[in-house]
Length: 224
Ligand code: CA
Image (tube, rainbow, N blue to C red):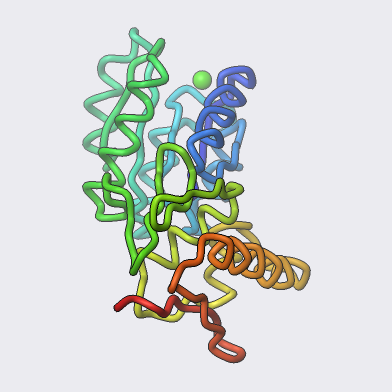
């Protein structure tokens, strides 16, 4: 899962980013409305946390423009207490939910989970395939009672593989969702991380394998 945070209070933006990373999300931060809009238009995000009062372009205008451009990414608006009218306007503009500042971390995470779940992006339960289970909370891969910790990118790749089991995931899609931009080096990174994941599957004595589909991408195999 990749989340865009558009927030001009640098300290708050960085704190939100750090928390989301700890929860195994990939995070990009924009500190004004214009760069937030440019990022959001790439349509690589699973969720956008969007402040309303922003320099260069306010959050409601960003949101309106995104919906006109048919970008349907779930948007969580951040509002100050004094901006009650903006909440209503925001929901009219196509926001999925809003959160009033100051908010608790738990509340932010719960709203993000609820929004992405509604959109069918992730299930709340731990994804399973064959003899492996991905523990979302701990960031671990589990097999037959043994577990191994996955790095953030490894975790995201495994999550994509399991939730799209039976389908080939192209290197392009991994790069787009996990690295967020297109570059030759990143394609090599995909191969490196796939090899890390294969080693971990072997360590766990799992029957599951990551198969390479030549020049296209990868898919899981080994479920009975
Ligand atoms: Ca602001």
